[in-house]
Length: 253
Image (tube, rainbow, N blue to C red):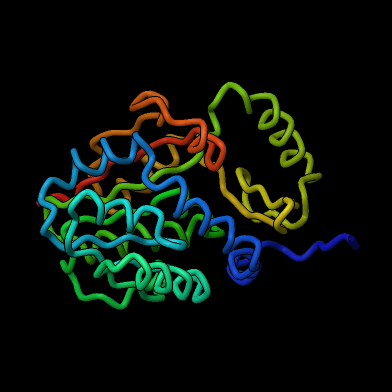
């Protein structure tokens, strides 16, 4: 493969999530994995009224959406930036016979009116698959706008402080300080690497930075904790997903 020095962008990210192999991978996770044990606990604790309108961002092929429906959540609006992901989710929705509404949305510029939802979920580290901090801040601001007062925004993100990656980030920091970082990357914390399914982008944030951005956006951070501290996950769940940190944020009254 020829070396591609093109910087990461939203279009580059979308290329990955439009690949048939990625669609199949996400479909398999939807059909076989469903909600993580930790997600069941966190969502039901923060989103207690299962009749209220809940928005899922970055829904992929519906792994979380269909899991929530099984738990009795009856008013779900689920969206993704990838039209192909939404199309696949709609196909599964028809097969499963659920009444979930799936639609294409740009999380940085939502089409909904203010105070439309009583809860928002951005699962599977989806927020950190949006390139550039300024764009992730836009998402936070949009979530605050469309949330009702005292409602929760829940998301997961990888954690740069994990001990297993400490050496990697120390070396990466040296590269950035000397200007020798990968030219495709936009910010320290970015990873844009070749996988068996193509070039995958993810931003691995610093905990203090995430908390600072949430507060700047107007949220109250009520909790952040590693997935492993919430519940033990099945081998199948661990096959499809790594350790991550839950963030529980509330729009103040």
